[in-house]
Length: 154
Image (cartoon, rainbow, N blue to C red; front, side, top):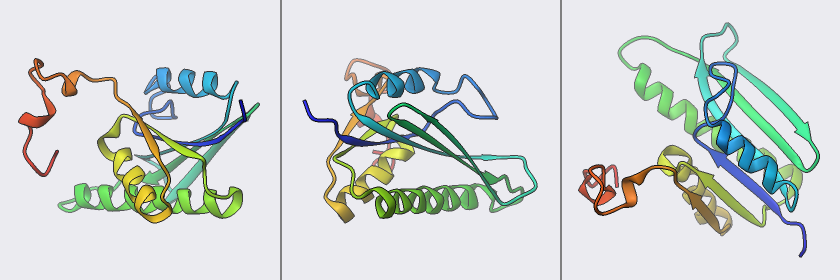
């Protein structure tokens, strides 16, 4: 089996705000690094002085890139958060591709939010993606079933 370059786009990941946030995703990424070269990207907001901070963690066959942006307050904070998150995530993906070339595939953990970046990546670079979801929203018998959600959320 040939080692592949896999870009992991995650909505949860251990970070300085919460060291247990998505720790199961981190363990999965590190296990996958036994067989493939993994680059994880996670973007979140936090209380800080600088507008942007980054953490890089490197181990054998895995790079974890955590991007923090300054938390805003006020009437447009929610909109700002979404737009800033998307811009920083797309920029990180573009920089990864410019440095490492197009990934062989993309793995999305928790598709709400990071799945939007995977769709953008697929449209722009024709990169296939795989989704790992850890919630029962895709179970038709469940109370949070995806197709019972409003159309915009779907």
